[in-house]
Structures are given as structure tokens and as C-alpha cells.
Image (cartoon, rainbow, N blue to C red; front, side, top):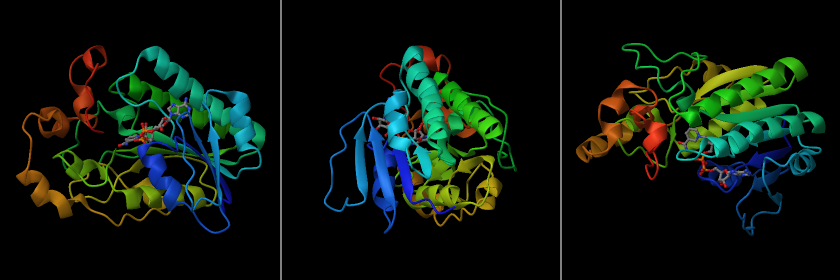
Length: 280
Ligand SMILES: NC(=O)c1ccc[n+]([C@@H]2O[C@H](COP(=O)([O-])OP(=O)(O)OC[C@H]3O[C@@H](n4cnc5c(N)ncnc54)[C@H](O)[C@@H]3O)[C@@H](O)[C@H]2O)c1
């Protein structure tokens, strides 16, 4: 698929800011959506700014009109109330898919998360398979399961191509023990999104979003089947990371090395998480 006009939700966020720059191509128009201010940049001649909420159906339908694809990154991450998650992550994702359908957009790339399956333990000697069943580690993880389910419905009922990216840990560089396995580099994140945009007739897919790290716990089979080719490996940073391990960082201890969801799996995470921001 040759996506010429692409809607990018969550464009002011960490991944969105990278994609805003890296997805730019001659002949491609990016429609950036976020509730936050999206300052225009000089190089932005093929960029449209749409400030608003993904929960606003009329707004999203307007943004999606005539687009080829939607990359849906907008989300609340950790440390929010159930009511807010429900509104933004679940209702918002449904609103994005419905706007895509009503506007005739044929492809949606959805940001899911390893937290949709975070309570799966590490499988010694085997990668966590593609399509492993939901085992969310938090209310946030539940919303990502719901997003995958909505994507599945919009594929089966309306024929949209929907590719769900179970993103592991997106960071400029890996910074703790867990990320030596979980790291998704910016270059690989871009490569995965481009693969999801251009795959021929992908239908509905769930793919891991992780670099080809030596210590990776997750399968790359399904991601590679849509054309993803990782070029980065967290092992290049292992000596530095392991030489500077912070023993008080939960991600360096039992939870970080035992469960896919790492620190999100600590007891009562959703009940006591106020002010706690573990890295993904
Ligand atoms: N960063 C990671 O390591 C990681 C890991 C797994 C999954 N993900 C997923 O990837 C996506 C992007 O992550 P990120 O790290 O860039 O997150 P981020 O928090 O940096 O960005 C999210 C963006 O969504 C926007 N947003 C929130 N509510 C909105 C609304 N109602 N309408 C429009 N925009 C809204 C925010 O303003 C923000 O700019 C998210 O869906 C996240 O769940 C990220």
C-alpha cells in the first residue's frame, strides 16, 4: 500500500514526535493530531496540524476524510484513573476506528503494548509468541487489550487492515537491565511503522514492537512477515548499562526479569501507582 495521506494521532508524544519528522517524504502529507499544542516547524510544508481530542468523533472524521492510513499513537500511559483510561484509550480508540471507517480509510496502525500481556512470565529458552493471549498487568494494559479487540472487530466486520504493534520499550537508548531485552530503537520503531503502512493485504495482525536484541524475549516472526527488518541491538549498550545498574530500580530486579510487564506487575500497581512512573 502506498500511503500518501497519513493521520498521526498522539503526534506531540515521544513516539509521535519521532514519527512526525521521520515519516516525512516527498509526496506524503501528514495530518498531526494531539490535544496538546503542536508547534509548526519550518520544514513542515506537507504537514497539517489538527489540535483536538481523539474522543471527538466529528473532529476525527474531518481529519480522516480522504486519508489513506491512520497511525493511532494517542493514549494515556501509566498513572491515570480508570474513568480517564476508559474515555481516552478505549472510547478514543473506538472513535478513531469509527472515523476511519466512515471516512473510507483502509488501514489503521494501532499502538498496543506489551502491558496487554504483561503478566505472562518469561519463557526460558523460547520467545514470547506472537498472538499470545491477553494477560494485562494493569488497567492501562486492559485498555490495550480492548484496543486490539476493537481493531479485530473493525477488520472482521468492515474489512479494514489493522496492524496492532505490541510495543515493548521505546527509548533513545536502553537504560536498564530489562531494556537490554525490551528495547525498541527509534530507527526500528520507524521501520516497523513503515512496514505496517506498506504491507500488502496484511488483514489483522498483532506484531511485537522490539529491536532484534540479543536478550530479546519476544518473537519477531510476525513483524518480519509484514516486512520489518530490525537494524539495532541493545547489546551494543550492554556493558555501559550493566556497569551502571541502579539496584533501587524495580526494572533491574525480579519483576523486571520475570514478567513481560516488569514493574507494572508489582502488587497493587493500579492501587498505589500515584506518582510512580516506571519506564516502559
Ligand atoms: N513509549 C513506550 O515505550 C511505549 C511502550 C508500549 C506502548 N506504547 C504506546 O505507544 C503510543 C505512543 O507512546 P508515547 O510514549 O509516544 O506516549 P506519550 O505519552 O509520549 O504520547 C501520547 C500522546 O497522546 C496524546 N493524547 C492523549 N490523550 C489524547 C486525546 N484525547 N486526543 C489526542 N491526543 C491525546 C498526548 O497529548 C501525547 O502527546 C501509546 O499508545 C502508548 O500506549 C508506548
